[in-house]
Amino acid sequence: MHTILLSSVMNIPVDDPVAFTFFTGYMAMLAASVFFFFERSRVPDKWKTSLLVSGLITGIAAVHYYYMRDYYTSTGNNPTALRYIDWTLTVPLMCVEFYLLTKAAGAKLGLMWKLIIASAWMLVAGYIGEAFNPPGGSMSHSALWGALSTIGYIYVLYAAWFGEVKQLADRSGDPTVVRGVRTLAWFVLVGWAIYPIGYMCMPGGWLNVGLGWTSNSVDLFYNIADAINKIGFGLVVYGIAVTSKDNATLAKA
Image (tube, rainbow, N blue to C red; front, side, top):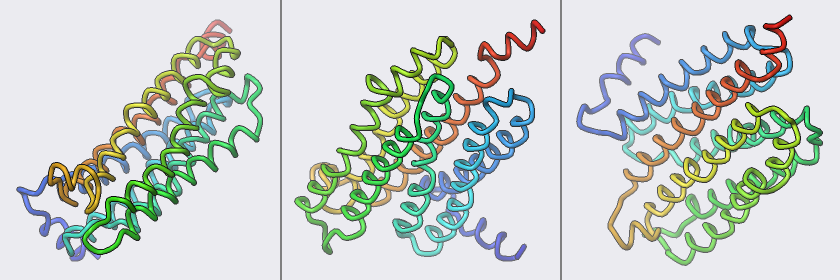
């Protein structure tokens, strides 16, 4: 096994930013998981599940990045199937964080399932648009499924900025939760927007046809987005857990 790992590292070209981000993404996700799991014991019980989910998100991503790194360095191709398997597990968990953060303010399981279904729709449509695009790339195919994928994204975005998630955060009466949910909403608006940029770099995508950006650009954008969003989500949740008014009450006691 040691020989296999060493061979994989040695095959990473020093002048290939995609291979570099696959490796650093793997290490960063693994380190984040260790951090979240260890810190879980230091936060109030109310936030332990939220921090557990944060560790699961980055842990699942670390395992997938380990295999995606090897796949890319061995073939030079975009590991589309592995990437969407990763997202199918981790993105709904990111949406679960919104439910957990607002549960004390009255969030129902129905909210969690609506967010999960919307994120799953977004991913399934995106996978069809990317994995089943005809050889050479069809702009009409990628545009159609990209538009359908956007429906799920818009629902999550609306819920975080104006809808039920935002309203529940305001109702919580905890300024830390309000700020934290708003920060996560910014991740959905700005951080998640990196993924459509990568999607449009594939053959048949607007950026591929218009600017000539290649499949390597897809992986580079996806790797950067994953590191920002998955680790960032967890750090925001951790920040809420250690600075919420529950902690202030415990300190006074």
